[in-house]
Amino acid sequence: MTRIAIFAATMLIAGLTLGGCSDGAGQASSPDPTSPPPATSVPQIGGTAAPPTTMTHPQRDARFSKVDACALLSSAELASLGLGAGQPTNRASTRYAVSGCEWQQPGRGGTDVVVYDQAITGPGVETPIGKVGRYDAIRRADDVGVCGVELIPSPYSRVVISVVSSREAEKNCDRALAMAQTVEPKLP
Image (cartoon, rainbow, N blue to C red; front, side, top):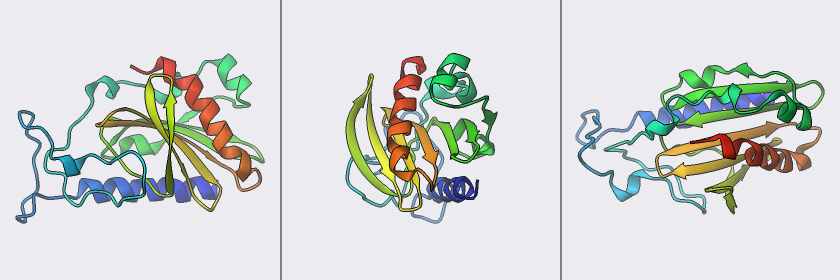
């Protein structure tokens, strides 16, 4: 549970950092739906570049505004992944997340799915892993037992599947990938 809280706090800080950007003139930026975002506003797949310093025109991917993360997995799918019923997470109340769900595994840590309708970057080393279904994907792992697979449906959205367990850290990336493969067909 503590590792999930650390990961959640890190993701929240990353979201708040991105959310606090300005247009460089001391004025808060306001989205202009008629202008495309500058090239520096979209995190690149691969590498470990820092998040952009400005986000003049953040874009939202409206397809994801109504996705319910807890409804992405059926009871049978949850059972096959060794999970029980999920609980909505408070990360869905952050500026960029629209829905989140968490599953606790007694003695094994936790798993969560968070849907973002804006581009985000997170902590850990980012490694491109090709496609999961229709979407480009990256794996993001850190040294405290967190591994996530991020599906990238568009430059303006992410679906993050994270697994946290210090006891079985070597299996976390495999579990995150299996869950991503199960969730992907249900995404818009």
